[in-house]
Length: 189
Length: 89
Image (cartoon, rainbow over all chains, first blue to last red; front, side, top):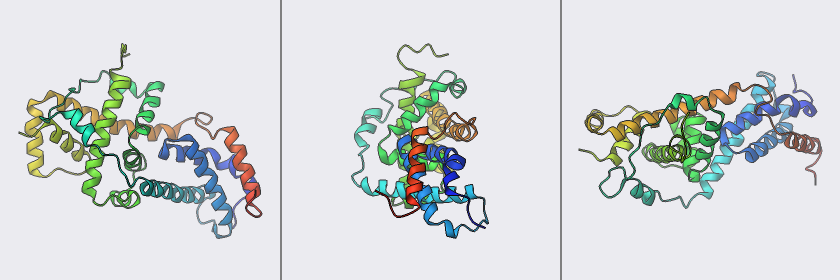
């Protein structure tokens, strides 16, 4: 069994692959590039498509590798990692207490139903320092096992990964607070 | 008594692995008397719930809501055609 005519791929699988990549990168332009790379790689590997899996499963398998390649190169470029210490010092102050205490959020369940909330949420993820954004996406949106996440992002220990996740979460909390739950002029519906 | 900074780390950690007894006690004691960290704990849990909901949402979106933009689809289709032979351009 061989794959179908590549001329039909974009129409038949383009949207599925795009959505898969977009969820795992939160970056539309990058998702488009990854879809293109996936199709081109698939074209070269057509002879090896066994028909054991569906064509779509096969393509998603290739896309997964492209995604991992992307995050790997990101880790390499990001050798000079952002130092969070100053940010955390500002957040907690010298005593280790919240400088700006987290206030309760009104109606978080309602936020999940709001179209605009998702725009804010995705923007907050994208605006994390790159290494934290990559980590949050791989861990919370791609559900990759810890060991794999550490390997792909070149994090030396799972302990370091947990510390970084904690930093990602306090930043996300602050971003959501500022741009959604307690935004200036919000009457919060 | 641990600081809020330390408590925030333990709250996050508890979402990724089970806390050791000592960690659990220290966090529990802190949370008893700190409404700010209790709020933070709810918010951190919400962030995870939102991530899960985002996955579900993007996987279940009706066709046409989050499609490959037509311009990109055209570009990729052309690249595929070129890619059939040698690497074009």
